[in-house]
Image 1 (cartoon, rainbow, N blue to C red):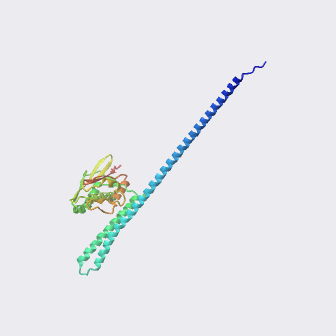
Image 2: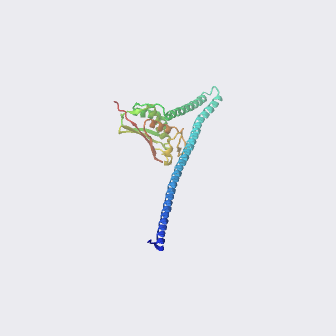
Image 3: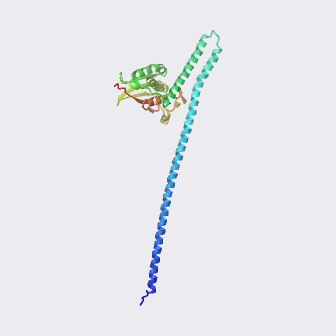
Length: 302
């Protein structure tokens, strides 16, 4: 005898099966949506990372372009200033020669005056040429570096003697403060002399109208000699300090709004100090003065 399930029980079984199938389909759809969402999130993150990388690359390209433009502008400004510095003495020489041509043989004093002017301008061109040659050597990566014991007190004394006349004309005194017999330092005597002369000249050049003082001071610590060249002159505005060591940079004189010199002095100082493994520093207050500092290794004989 065969038993048959009631119809309503079969309907319930079919309904359960359909519900399970629907639930499974819903789970699959949700899982698929989650997978697609996750895939979309990862893809969006990759796109964002690529966009950020491209943004950084574009920023670097723009920075390099700006740096190249700035370097190019500085180069042309440098060429212009050097050309001007060469042209002016050449023009003075030409004018003096034309004046010499108008002198009679009896006008000895006029001959001597114009010849003295020509000699002065030739020496000026010679100094400019020497500075350009020195700067090119300092900027050459393979230039030889001289290291020998240097009596820094003797270097300072020679600088004071050489700068004395120009300082006196401006009413400036050059003073030395430090030990009578400081330790020798390791370096290039000629280059160190040039660096100190440039710093002292800078202090004289930007002295106040009534004169002032330029002080060279030494102190020793931690196996190094610390050199400071300070003046009580016009000072340098804070916004100009970052650029004063750039080649051909010339800070304006507040008294005249004009720029002085060839603009090579502080670039040469920076090159010399860096060649000696140091770093030149500057502190300045407008109207109060400027102090340049650097240090050198003390010579310790074996």
